[in-house]
Length: 160
Image (tube, rainbow, N blue to C red; front, side):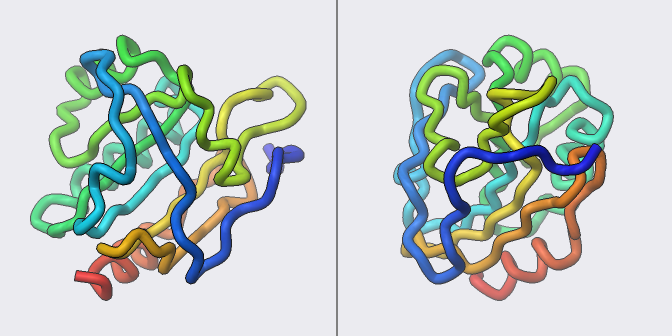
């Protein structure tokens, strides 16, 4: 499925990362700003309950082992659904976060504006350096396609 119309615009490489608050699996609140001082690979996916999103999360889980960066996957899935997926899939190296409460992904320009996936987030990857600056970004042009894993991991390694 081609990428539908999105709300807003994606922040530029070299720009400070916008605010991102999310809900953890235990329903507590967290924020990207809590990770300042760490390199973060931020994944935006429509839903962990889809094959492509599940495959992407599993792949980053494997590739994140020993990477030295925090990999954070954000979707509008509920914390309960994220916890179920992560437990079932053995996800240990990716931190899941739900955007269902705050909708902060609107500031990242990836909220789907129309169609059957309206209100979900498009598939995108960012690498954010220790100072909170965006150093890499990929907006995947087809919802059913996976991101360029090698480019994202290389971008993260370059910031470590």
